[in-house]
Length: 503
Image (tube, rainbow, N blue to C red; front, top):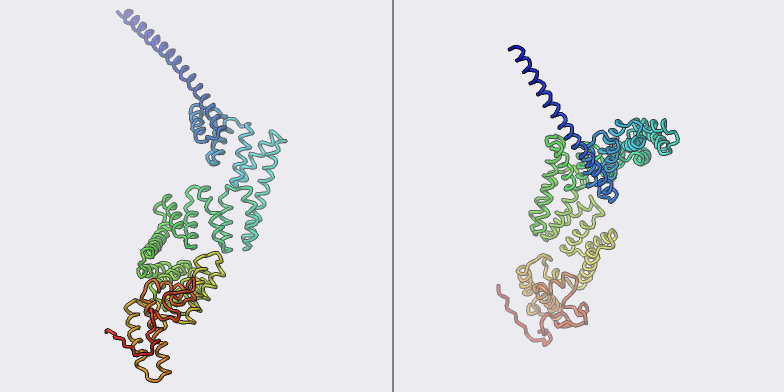
């Protein structure tokens, strides 16, 4: 019984072992098949990657190299080739890990060391770059590129010392000159650009500071400080939309960043006010625009650009609302702050025209013309102001009736009736007085006709007297050569003339 049981156990064990051996053989066969297929696929991906790289289709090439690396993580050449694609795409940060992995797999792979050293040098990492170049030269002393790059690494360290020394003594111009050369050697080093940006800011050149800081947002991971600095620089220049864009990028990296959040709220509020004010102007709602621009000055009283801009636009709105006296005051204040601003000079000139001060209007347009000789608007404004000045020395229909240029038709008729009654020739006995009254009466009637006719008034406001034959093309007007606005002159007969005025 015992022998039979023992024999049975041995047979069972032998059966299990046989089954395991058979399973191992099957698995081995299957594994060989898988590995063989993967190797073929890897070669296919490498070949496709090479062709696409040669054709300049970098993104497609990169995807094939990704597959190749995943399929064979021990092949140093595959990492090196993928690094080459990253470099061709301008992604040096992504290339570095692949080059390092290739060197780990094959420490004597000099091409990878040289390439990595070049990247490290451009990033400003001179110590590690030097180690790579020296390793290459130990194995290949005549390698010219490694010799040149090692010299550049040494030069870069010396230049850094010079730049920091100049910066320490406050010589920012010299610092920038040295940093210019450093940027040539290490264009991917954010610290160099940040230092140069600081120097530009101290020298009052925020535009160049912006140019330096912009690439640092990509050269550093999570560079919130650069986004905030860019936002504040654009804000100080009056570029509130650009400022808003940069501070939003900061908050994308960390929505709870206190400095960025605080600045965002300020820029957002001001931007909304500015946009709203300009919308009101587009809709000819000038008084509402004035209120908004007054809010802008309260929101940001410390940045001159926004105060100047607000005064400039308020000046414009006051002119549009025909508030001449107030417009002249505001425009003059804005002109003192920004004396070369042709928009302010233009608007003040228009305010002077409203105030019938044509000489000053001509002066403002002439000054604006000196700053911008190409502007058709300024040229046409100057010509109109000069015509109005010339006309004012002959007869000014507004002055004849004693009304402002902004007077409406009802005000003009009211003034006409009052003056016509006052200067009616029947009111005078002596011949000399009667002749003077006739002249005044004709001028009053002429002024009333011109200023109550929209087309004729528009001509006069443009610097042309519609009742003056000399100012009419072709020399003739149908209104009479002596300026009498009707088809006859009732004074020619010398008879009695009676006019009835309805009150």
